[in-house]
Length: 410
Image 1 (tube, rainbow, N blue to C red):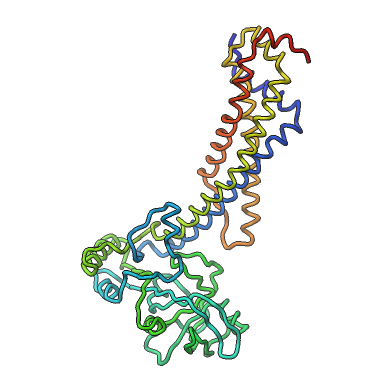
Image 2: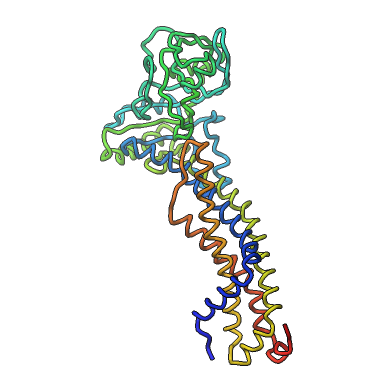
């Protein structure tokens, strides 16, 4: 006779309930593995969402130009992208900036030259921090706010700088440092503005503005010994409707400037979040692969308890076969028990994973993300582990000879 699927579930529930402690310990490995994966994916998605939300909040009329051809999103490709650091040889130049400014429907252009170096007060402390050489348009395009003083102005006499609030505190012990002098790579700059605190080092400009020094592009060239290493050009169109046409013209113009060499990348929308989002995705992938080790350990635990269960229930298997149960019925019975243990551990791990993610996020600048992809990943992982590690014990149970099994006494 065919044993109903509902009976399989009922028997599996009874078997697991009869040895609660053993079943709980068996599920623990799956719980830890799924909890680790859930935590990693939730936090990674939260970090990536920050950049995407920033781009969306700018109104959708922003394009970003970066040197180099568009890279892939594999770990190897992302690892080659020097986020927040100076490119060895940028393909973008002052000629490109001037050409882009002349394109119709371009509202503003802000080049970014990111330099590394030390920054210090004349008599106070010092710090090693990003030095960003740019133009006043960056304030408009990237929606940067000044809490005190003013933003960059090339018309002002002398070398001037705008600094982040945390850098001001680190160097001067206060965020009220307007008028004070700092040395940027040994050169004196007068502070004319303090940026509004963001508490968020993650952004598509790859600059932590709370700890950065912003100087005029001309001063950046001087500090870089006359070289103009442009790591990024931010472009704002007059409206969202014009952005597509502006991007087309940018590509045409830069190809002409670069002798038909596509050694640059023009990004818009969610693409701007790359490579930042891609980096988090790649790091999450590596972390998940490491966390998967605990899943293998949990799977071995399931296989072990199922083999023990088969040995303990040999006579029961013989009775069921004698009453007409087929090999597929026996396999289904033990597979369902294995899946019950795995899915139970997976659900528990998913819940604890998010609890852990929210606990960790209290020390970070972003929250974990809930989405169906993470829930689906937890479910699929549980199903795969339960099936893979439960199949061998189930087949072994089905192969038992009913006569020999009936001779087995408890």
